[in-house]
Length: 341
Image (cartoon, rainbow, N blue to C red; front, side, top):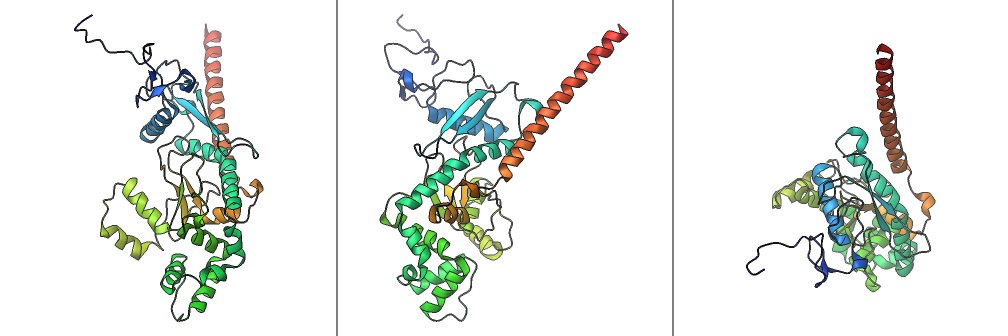
């Protein structure tokens, strides 16, 4: 009727116009509409649903549907070794409401589980990156050849980056020898290719979420964390702090492949998508050792660390044991009540 102020219910799309995502309002085909693990009928595109789950996970420690607020379990299918270089997020309903200990694994447990599930895809992506960039292995095998074309200033900066010193090194050949001794051919290959934006052979390595992995120095990564996650204002004071204490400060950066806590002096490949995906809601980092292991040396998944696998399996076992203990206690109370009756 004329003058009606009724608003359209996004869960009941108008058949006269394309269906729209309830968040971004982009048109959706019926085949593009994400099937939800809850009873909601609100249409979402995968990107918006993914970001909404990541936002709720980071703010409240649990992924929840943005409409009904029911908790959502997230898993990841990395696909097959010979399949496409992409995986698939899997969403299912949690059995409880997420309010009690037995209804949800800890936040760290969820992050560990997803990192473990995504690891085979990440190693596959790195191996394929190495296959496309043949210069990586060539540089690793003969690093001095690649370093001769670099300036003395650049070599000194790289040597400092890996914790070395240029004191007393006056000739370029001496700097090259010191850099090779300190870093090794694989890490030099990583640095050279990163400095030339993929060596002119294509895009940067991809993350498991499809974003780009950017190589940062350990100090630059710490600076990024201080600004983005800890609310530190960007200023010269940050650089001064990192410059004086980086070699002594503990780092909160952990490699999502080998589960190693990284030194502020260690370079790292970090995803440009940050924490905007539920696949890695606390950002995603690959240390340079793992990059060399899979992209340069082409190692298989037998090199993967098992710490994350053991961690989340232990947490899930403990959570199940707690549930069983509570159920057993409840049955005991009921039996005593029956006897007293």
